[in-house]
Image (tube, rainbow, N blue to C red; front, side, top):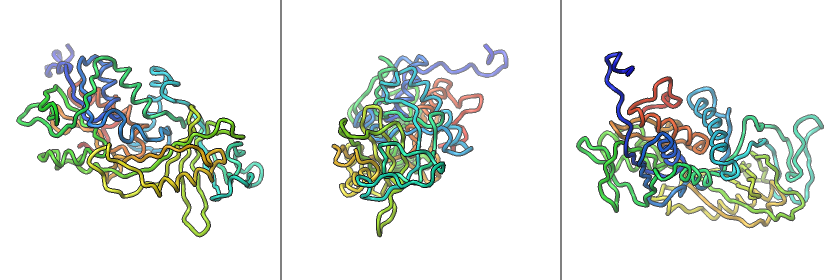
Length: 385
């Protein structure tokens, strides 16, 4: 009615069918918010399955104010607040969500099992938690008001469940987009599938997909989205250990005699396991998430570093993993319209879990409106794709 009064065109009808390529955190979040908005049919296509890449292997650390005051800062703050809302909607226990304290600490490699705290003078920093007896030079990086954590795989699964029957997950590979003014995608198994809108959320494979498609997509900044491999290991300490991990997330600095310092991040989880991740490398991006494999030497180094951080992690059963973080040359994600009816959202780097749900909420709003969200989009400041 408002559009008719002003003489403008009527708003477009809401989409009856949206096809989303990629079932990671961005794709599943977009599907969840589209379902909540009333879209009756959402086809979520992924060749490997939900949370098969970084969204199932990331640490899930959340920080409200670590991304500066620019576009990243606005997106991070909104993302942090949305995670609290999602925990209330989906169940904090279900998705492994909790607020945490975050510490920076220095350790000496190989000393933790036999060394007690060697920190500075009293009053120079927080006291070391009992499970970090070798920690020195402790400082606070965040409080429960500004840092939190979530289990990425559980969150992704809960978003799919929360979206209800409107979301159909299809195990297939998206090989192209429909051309000639049509909206839709070509699937390896199912062939051409028409839709009212398509969202490309293929993570580090987004750029390769667009380059294969050619045309305007291959010339867009989104075609530069690539991947950087990151390693992690999930350790499960013996529940009878003298000092089990608390809820503190630790950004460590480990001193090695005659070697470079390493800086693994250590995130205890509510289920008793501990997620440890380290520096990435420049391994080439494989064709699919199913072909991603960790480097045994990197996993061995991470496992040894974990034992230097906490005695309870020495010898604990370990589940090694690797994933490729979606990265861009600018450091900013590519989020926006590729062409009429086709949207792209990828390249969130190490902050994908923090900012993926809010990106999905915004993209869903754009799709529902047929254009950019009015009223100052949180992600509109990012370079259009």
